[in-house]
Length: 556
Image (spheres, one colour):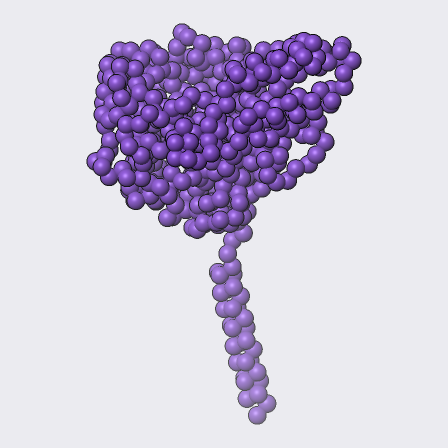
């Protein structure tokens, strides 16, 4: 009996042990590994110059399945995405996307701006210290030296001990230089004029790679000089206005701004490559060159994350020429959709499906042509800066006895000469307020703020918030003025941008690929949120001036 009990006890213990072991083994198998970061082989950042958010929705029915629709259907769309600063222009836009902050911190306060220290206008990417590569002109004398902070691309280079490659490509120099950051392996941009070459700066390298030299030496670039007709039957473009309107700027040698565009300069294979920028073929050229970089630089070919920055600039040139409501803009986006499809297809082949991450956004939006809006009885119009300066000069002479008190007016800012003000024994804050009140009385100026207001207050909403985020204490002016909604200082044809208004701030943001959830949000997101979102995904340090916040909904 005793032996029987021992046998039963032994069997029971054996059963319990087996059950525990199986459960423990099962728990060990099912327990997911701890992941603190994703490691896509390649991150591709795409910036579409002057892309309003509603270009996604307005042309949606015309897009194919492999471009915008693929990214949005399989990725994450931020529907309420905004620039949170002004001026909304190309240089600050690209800098803000990649630094995770605004001009208040990164210092790129415009494409050009008045340098208060040097007493002259400077360009955001120019640098006389470095010679051009690929051209005998000064088109390559560029660097990111005016950018005061690191970029997400810099942080990737630092994190990987420079083993991760960074290549930046754009028709515009600033569209490549600023995203590439301070540590890019290379940045390339296109010199038009009568040159028609991809160029760079000795800031990055001593010689152009053979694949770039070969690309330039081939006849590929000449092949883009061809007639521009619509991709689809123009009668299907019901989402845009008439083809021939007074709100568009024709090419030289064109009687009217209508399809097909086939001027002698566009068809010439030997001159005026600048004209390519004003056609969708500029985007085709950019995509082709970027794909050459992908293959020849071996991007995404190993386990160390690389970064390819692509900026499509022709959308901006065409928007400035024809305007938001034009059939040219619509056709450009339908063709861009095909370029995106080509890029995604090549990424699938060269890097691997599920092995790369992409984000797509814009550097600013655009206002509909104010002349068109005005004709449609919407409040809109133009500020005549020359007329304003004449009236303003009379005020300065009457109030202060001299015009020397003002050094510069640009980017909707007034720069004062502080030494002259001190010599006149006038309080600087009083002068700022007096001039602000004068400007507020001018027709079409809606709001005015002083530098002291920008320094002393902490705005968290509305136009003052947007202006303050763009106000750099060392570089910005003494008085900032804002035009009425729908107004611009521009010609009466084509669209422009630069204001703190919603049409200039609301742009798309799409994330796609490895580490990205599928979905969308209508919560407000802002341009400086992009870089920290990518940094969080990669598990690397944020750019050192970051003021944005990772978008939690995006990350898988």
